[in-house]
Each structure stands twice: as structure tokens, then as C-alpha cells.
Length: 59
Image 1: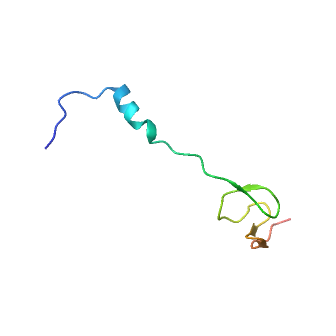
Image 2 (image 1 turned 135 degrees about the vertical axis):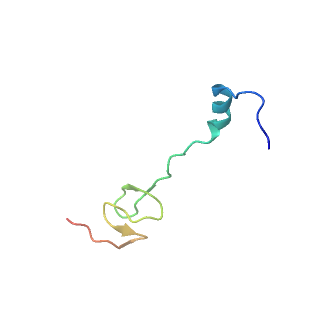
């Protein structure tokens, strides 16, 4: 079983982990109302998806 001979410093550990970060989600605009939404999801403002109204809004 492998056992480390020396302690790994905080800076060495953090330098190795710099690429393991979460990226921001990509956003797209709704074709009906122009609001920002997640791609492949129903628009939370107008309830539209792929050019048609899927969910009725409570207005």
C-alpha cells in the first residue's frame, strides 16, 4: 500500500485543484418573450417551449 513520505502543502494541493471548479450554466433566450432561460427547459415567464405554449401562466 502506498504511503506518502512527505506532507503535501496547502499551496501544492490547491494548485492541483484549480481546474476542478464549477462552470456557470449556459443560458439562452426564449423565442416567444425574449427572457433568459436554461436551454431545453420550459420558459418560466411565458411557459413556452419550442414555439408553443406548454404551461399556462397564472396571469
